[in-house]
Length: 130
Length: 130
DNA sequence: CAAAACCATGGACCTTTGTCAACGGTTTTG
DNA sequence: CAAAACCGTTGACAAAGGTCCATGGTTTTG
Image (cartoon, rainbow over all chains, first blue to last red; front, side, top):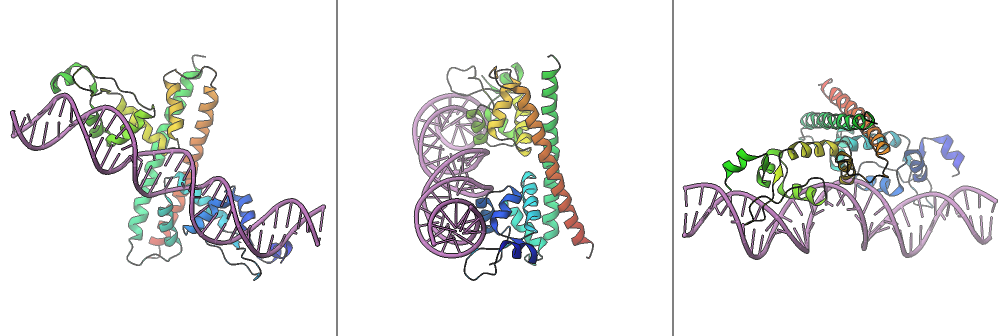
């Protein structure tokens, strides 16, 4: 199967393109896959072991980055993704999880903003007297 | 020197009180000190090796927490603190450093906020149909 | 068709940010 | 004064999040 086929037929790509389009490293992507944050399919050719990565992973990988900036760990993300995909353990308190995480992220943002203010004040203090 | 003396004379405390007032662990505080993020003084008694921690460390330790939430590493903080204390390498580009860091923190906040929106949307989607 | 580029897998390795345990000394307290 | 609580130092350990390397196969390209 050549490039054009892959391009025209559907929205999947090989890992190299995902690397280019996300800026992540190959190893990082595989690391996420090993930890269940993303999934890939076997690819149509029986002759190789190349895997297909769907288009929407680009969005998901971006979200993973945002989540990490918000203080989420891989384990947190793993849980959240099971919520997204509806495959969560039925007696898992999804609402409670979400509420707690929302609060935590709001706290992180508030703290980061307080720090940002310190940083800006420092810059002013340095530029003022100059 | 007894407790009252220490309390009345000046604004320093021993590590145990710092632990209580910051919520950090003893080991974390020592870790930060080993890495130059905070400093302590030898304490007045010659008979022991206890150290004195100034009152303002409480504020600084709070700031360190905020900085970490904003994506700062210990190494970043070490640089920033040398800027605070005016002891920075004279040919270090302080302005450039601050500008870059401010931009980075703003980016972290923006990304965390985008993620927060995802989280809230997910909660709504879950509560709505219920 | 040969070289260059790409892919998967497995496991070792690395950095960051702490945490724990052990040892021996000092203070505080009942 | 004795037990309990506190302190400092050292060094090993740990978990998270990746990164690197070797090996061997597949595609793409010139």
